[in-house]
Structure formats: structure tokens, C-alpha cells
Length: 388
Image (cartoon, rainbow, N blue to C red):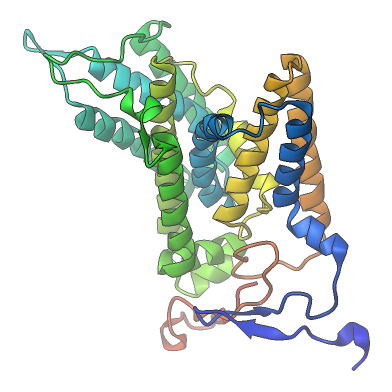
């Protein structure tokens, strides 16, 4: 065996997955920088803006910026699930705005039979999140059951949801979301302004969402199904993976997370506008791509997506702090996104497609049992034994 044919040393983690040992085939600085680009980019942004502005690297400013990032991050985690499945969800921005509109509508009171009802805060939150999940369900059914292209289905829903929001408000904004103690509907501003353990509520929600989704992807059968169907949908289906069910679920979760992000944003702004979240779907996609996920599906993780959201958020806020024109902010943000896509192309071009995708861009050929046993696989199907 020549040096070029030597296989890397494999290690086994706590879940029994085998992967190459770090630097087992020699230290490669280029590979390290490529795989950790989101982390290194975030460090570079913090260092540069800390030098340019003494107020950038302060605890209060970092918490403020993190609360801004939380909206992007929650939205991006939902987008990650869809992209891992090989799809795209362009309706998350309008879903975000619509969830705020639903909350504002309920907070103003619902007239029923001559009586106006004022739902409590938790009823408002549950109904708004339920509407977001319902929008995601429609997307999932269109894509999975009726085989509508994800781009077309979610683009159509983007306009439908935005239009319904505009009709509900007549193009106006709900400005009074504080509620009235006498009506029992106060507390909506708690999401945007209160803190727990010294952290903004939005940041805590982001942390909880990140942990839950990370466990979902790495510790559950659904996570294995998602990576398998995103890596090679046909092979996963032959191996017994309920591909359509997985596809519907990821869109439902994407809609749910968009609604949660919308509630946090509306609370921070103390207003609900049907145009809120405009172009946020592009920011969410950018965060996922910067975090190292493959747009073709099957590769990506929550850690990278959160880092991508922090890169975008800290860069945007840093440019504001040092007084850069909003036009140049758009240029810099777009340049970062283009560079991230280019690096993804460099990293994944020429790599063979694997049946189960991969949990991150630096994992190779981990061994995981197929969702069904060999005996249960359809006749003629080759059970998938590896995910890369």
C-alpha cells in the first residue's frame, strides 16, 4: 500500500460511530481552516471590531448582539433541517412576520358573538406557534405528497402568507402589544426584554432550540432517517426509511421555529408588522451555508449553523457600531455569503455522494445500523450500512 492509499486511523465515539481520527493522516492547515471557517471567521470579526471600537467587546453589547442573533439562529436551525433533507424553505421569513401578526391580532381582542375575548399570553404563543407549524405542514404536504418542487412550493407560500398578513392588518402595524392587566393579556414584552440568569430570553430560547435539535439529529432514529434521506433519498427509501414522513416533519419544524423567531422579534420591536422578516429566509440560508452544510443535503450540523448565524449577526452589528453605511453593510454581508458558498463548493465538489449524508463536513464513513434490519428490507434492496 502506498502512502496515498493509506486509510486514516478510525476512532469510535460514545454512540458507536466510527470516524477518522483528527490529523491521523497528517496535519493539514488548509483543511483545518476550511472545516473550521465559521469559527475562525467569527473570531476574526470579534478581533477586528474590538480594535475599531472600544464598545464592541463589552458584556452588555455582546448580550445585545446575541439577542439580535437569536432570531436569525432559531430561523436558521429550522432551515438546516430542511436543507439536510435536500430541500429549501423560502416561506420562513413571511411565516415569521405572520406569527407576529397573529399574536398582535389576538392581543387586540377577538370579537365573538358581541363579546370581545382577550386570550392570555400562553394562549397567544401556542396559537401563533400552531399557525407556523400549520404553514410548514402545507409546505411539507405539497413537497412530499404532491411532489411539488420545494423552491416553487415554498415560494408560493411566501406570497400567500405575506398576502394574508397584509389583508388581516390592511397593511398596517399592530403597535400596542403590552396588553392590559385588567384583561389578563399582559406579558408579551417578556420575550423581548426580560432576562433569566442574566441572559436575554431570546438567547435562552436559542440555546434550548439548539440543544433539542442537536439531540434530535444525533440521538434519535428520526435524525438517522433525516441524514439518510438527505444523502440518498432513493437508497433510504429502499432501506425502509419513511422518506415522505420525514420530509413533512422537517417542514413542520421549520414553520414552528419561524413562528417562535417571529414572536421574539415582535416582542423586541413591541410591534407586529406583516412585512417583518422580509428577506430573512435568505439570511437563514446564508447562516446554514456559512456553517458548512451542503445545499445538496445530508451534510451539516447545529453547531455550524449557530456559528454561521453569529457570523452574520456580529458582522452586521459591528458595521453599524463603527458607522458604516447601510449600503456597504449589504455589500459586505453579500460578499461573506458568496465566499461561504464558494468554500462549500471547493469542499464538496468531487466528493462521492453517500447514502446517509454526514453529520458534519469533517465526518467520514461512520458506521450506523440501518433503520430496518436486513430481513425487513424490500426484496432486491441493498441495505445501507454506512453514512458518511
